[in-house]
Length: 601
Image (tube, rainbow, N blue to C red):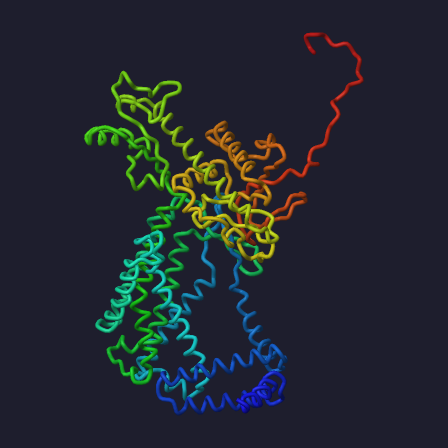
């Protein structure tokens, strides 16, 4: 202990301020290079990779406490090399309007990335063809440190891919076996995950490598079919982008974005797999003696990738069918009647957009209840009937009856929406403000998980409504039918996002939304909402801002939240009225006293 207490301060001083730091680093690197010339397998390379990581961490700590000139020059060189890639930098933003249409085009960086990954796959295949024992020996003969750097990057990428390959199926299992109260992780989930990992291990040991690569290619064909045949709900949302130092704006649709992400992921997995275990493609696994650990990781990545892609497609499909932008589905519950009567009732109401409710749909959809009675006891045309509505099958041929049913459904959806909104903002009231000015409220958008704040500390490149959520997620609080109804209502009134100033209570917010529903009913088929429609709201001010491509700061005294650098949408702002917007004007007065005939006055 005395030796450690005497050596440690001197070692710490040498690392932070000593003049022998740079020579020590050079000696360590030379020693590491000599060690690599004697090492024979990548298992020994794990020790070299750890040593190289410690050297780099030590250089970073030393430079932080006492800046070193050669580290500064090296950092400046890296920065200059990074500046050369400015031509592929992009600015992204959402386009929630969809019209007028923007020219559609994929960025240049996407094509360059795909070409680079394809070239990587070709070079990796050729390297394993000419060096069946692995590409480690020829690279080590040039520089062992460079080899360690490349190997560390390869191992890190494969490790992250393995984590994703286990995490995404775990999310699907969580959807299939929902969590019950009191059990943080139930037995079915553990059995399913353990069985999946065991199956992957057995498959990677028994079957050749080309099987998972072929399955991945089939997933890419599936994404190609989705692009040309299906959309993502009925949403008009797309991404718009602009190249570095350019004024031209282009758009990317969601199906095309899905195909682009799938293409990059598949080519990237091909490149990782071929780089790590390409010798298995030729049936000559001679590299197991030299690069056995790398081969094992590459094989695991290859066999985990089909499950990862399948899980991603399942989650995307789940998001698609539960997207608020999808087709609105209304459910009706028939409380009595025999099975033939129920089937006949379902055939009569299906052309009008109704579906018979089941116990499963009761939780996710608003449902109206009716009863089949004798024609003489029908209340379908009464002024103030009781619910469940009593009607006969003949009443379903009357268009006014279907209008009444639809109106009942709308009222239930609105009441449920207002109750959930009141609960949400009562919970948000207890959250500290932390410099924020307002809330982003968008339960009708599928990519927004919950209520978020316009953070004053957030960067301008970050979409503020994708920040930390406040309160429960929208999918847990609002039924899906309510979110669908609210989406179609806001689309009809040309409202994309709602911004609510912090400090406005739940009561005024509910009154403003009631006023929004009145404007929708009065102008149905709805027109776009305007500021004048909310002038009757005392103490509160509702304003609309059309954000077209770029956000421009106005001269208004009201706070304008930050958004993405690019964006095309219409925002509904809800503020506390600050007054001083209107000026009193004198009534017009004429000094002309010429007589005018009464009939002309």
